[in-house]
Length: 124
Image (cartoon, rainbow, N blue to C red; front, side):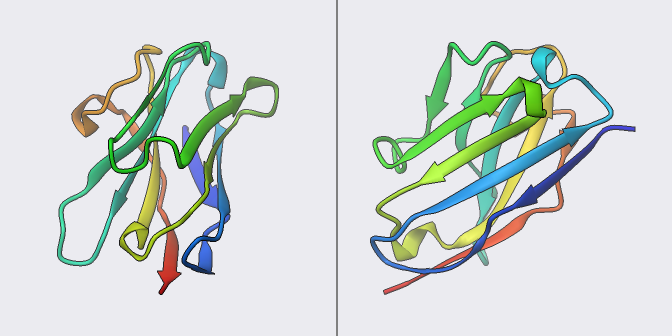
């Protein structure tokens, strides 16, 4: 059974940093594309970042480009989202997702597995 467990969320002041982690179990991370999405209260879930199976290709939403970095450690079966220069509008529940064919995408419809989410709150 494939499981994704996010961690690293919390409360931070604007301009601060957080690093989210997503641990994958039940499947080799090395053949899986991974994505991060977020959902703020009253809003639809939106794409944040994605990384393909090898880590050679990464994709970012315009709203986070230059501030967030997605990376992966296949030996640890873990994907990370380093978030710098956080803004109050980054406040949301952040979810990681896995796509079993190794192809990263900004569309949430292609992802096969989802974590439970971790709350990120940024105060002004």
